[in-house]
Image (cartoon, rainbow, N blue to C red):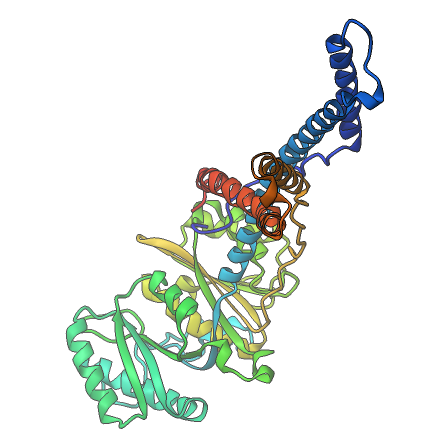
Length: 476
């Protein structure tokens, strides 16, 4: 899918620091000190212990040993920090990918009407299909029909009247986003008519009305899912135009952010998740990624709707679902798969909302988890609709950052060196309260400061490489 998880492998844990290396450094340092002592000793023989010759030499030897151990520990800490940064970024990316995929709105109420009144009952196999009966092409057969904008107004009034009681009950007042999508071409005229209908109804909501072209669920819809903090009303319809032979349908979905629901209402609420970009030429991989996203539990039975897929893709659909071990409602549709173009009509981009409305109504027949696949010449999308909570991510392991042993040793050596210089050049100040407080303050700043600076610099250098790896993984 276009935004799915980049396949960046985690790095192997850094080799732990070895005390044997530190012991080897100590032995080599003492040996080197003895060699230097022998080579630089006076011709008359080694000085006595009381001569003062050995103390500076011993101090320099142990200073060199401490510096070598600090360099080794600091090098190990840098390697461990690089691995920790990389693996934490991979983990954070997976969690963000899952959190983004789990964003959804709750369908509190819906209305779906098709010119074929028995469509859902036949698909759910609760009604025997009568092949001799030809479904009508128009909705509301008992009311007068005037094709064009009048028909749009008629169906809009009908949908608003049907969905309005639910809105008043669950959301009596406040801001409301209204999204209207139709098959009509004159959006300006539709907008004027709809505003007139909405304002004439004396509704208590402050509506932000937005008209969309008859296209696929896209970035605009995902913006609603990810950022909306207010209820959304979706109205979608195909209404009769002069010389039109495509069957009519109309649907309304009243959606609300899950944060606005009571905890008891969230358990079995019907959820509509983000629309995912789909590569229909690689259904095995794409549906596998959608399953791994765990918007709904993988063990639940699924019902799959699709529209716009090619003949080859339709034929491979069941094989793909079988290979992925996706459990299907085999008593609904054709083994749990519904070709909406064959079952109803080919609405192209508008089929997205038609299938979502039909899927919301189909939930009354039992299917709690439904997958909707839609494709046309502008792209392809997959949408999940279900009544179970998204699955909590399994990637909960939190690795501890590497212990800053090297940074601590470097800070101690640095402070020791600075204090030695202070003693050499300003002895009176070094042994005063000012000198002691300066040393303490320097330790307080450098002990955590060097570790912090090391991690920041390492992350700054390493982050462009991680971003480049994500882009080269074939995902965005």
